Image (cartoon, rainbow, N blue to C red):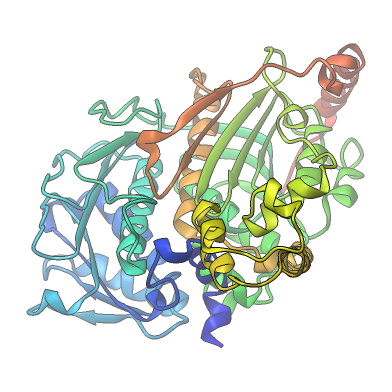
Length: 505
């Protein structure tokens, strides 16, 4: 049963192969969550701690929490959350820790760095997320409240814990030392906390599509921000046991609950939230009839077709979060500027030569694939992509034609797996969510974005090595070829939308 709880993180770690020697063991290792009084007393410190707790339970079954005696209210809240979210095993609360060396990883919310222990410290200030797993202590200033930076810091910190638990080798990624990252500017090493959040953010008829791992993070942040107005939430699935390993907010009691309904309950105290537990095509039929077309859409989707369906609404703004195994991305698509839309950015794959597909599936070079009667050699393994070396190494001496047949069969099987089994880890999804909500806040505040349209990085290497990917509209895309018609449709839709009023279900 536990393997199903952690199936997504386990599958993600397994793809690292020999770069993660403990990839099959990490869920049973011991982790301590603790913190310093001064940092925990701030709003950001509190959120770093609670988000860290919510994330750690998704990757490890043996969590111990130790809080300073002064933190009575935080302990009460953490205990309540722990009772709701715990699933791999009970979360243990202790008054003090006399043997910190008994833990495989320690996550602290504060400033102190320690190299004598498997120690990672995090905190945040404004839009800044800070983390250190080395000798360098963190800046103590944490007074500018911003849950976006706090969730970013918690995600980075739990990512560091994950690296320790799987025994990540340096060739694939390294621990971060005295690192800070701005979710406002996407700059590493920054000390400027960025602009203060406005007292109110009006989001009328905001559409949120997808309440999986990224969507959970988005909903969590929206519930903490001063957002008012109305939100439509669309997702046709219910939470399954596999979602426990990736979705920030849920616990065992939420299994079987419609994702859209769950999100609506979280959001309702601050906004007028309406939920639709149906596929997007069915929901789209209601637009322009029962409810207005949205001017802004936040997408937390996992496939190309769904992204194209969202883009077909042609709103003023689409913000999209995306993740891979450890890839983390945000993209921002405004109507008007010469910036790629979702259809430009996410293209359906074209057919490819058989040799190329077989090479990708096996790790063998295309030249070797063309020699089907020869056998796999250790040299083939050495030259293979890192994520295929372990698999290919177990087939040394086997004829290449047989290896190709096996690999292609496995690939087909993976492609047919339901969405609930897609490999992912919660800290990558939540960092993507933080970037998505950051872009939404910028838009609602009238602040400019640097995205044209996306920013992307490998989580195991850290956002400091992330890159902007500017991309203009593709001349062959519908956003260019049918621009005049889209403009007419947009004008008609938004004029009609003025007659609607929204109210919660």
